[in-house]
Image 1 (cartoon, rainbow, N blue to C red):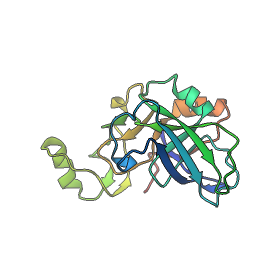
Image 2: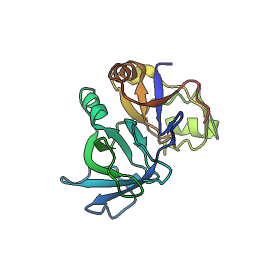
Image 3: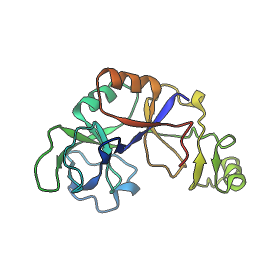
Length: 195
């Protein structure tokens, strides 16, 4: 498999998360927003008290936001992606600012590349039939994932459409670029993942 899930859990560091607030306020749950955020929007993240030292280049929050470091953002801007980067202030639970600069990565590309035939998931027959006969049903329980890699094209960083998995996917080639730039990312191979 040539793709990886980006994780918010890091070996020896544990789970990295927090809560995100936006200015101006969004007026609805962040996860439900499918459009770009208004020009001038900023974000603030307060990390959970268990996070004492943030040295990673990617993490997610319990509010559904995904955050990338300045260095990761620079690499992503050179790829085929439609991410809106929102300036974000990140601080520890005690109010101290973190050492790196972070951005909220809003509106990742969602690709319809889930292989309904070769993946394992709940209500397989019913959901697979809905692909051909709408309305399209969302896959909620997945035990094994396969992708139609030929449909992904040049996308290096994306989310799955019609699947209740909220982790972004990164290509193996782009992950190697990130490793050469010494980014601290935690990944899980898509093909071997059992959720």
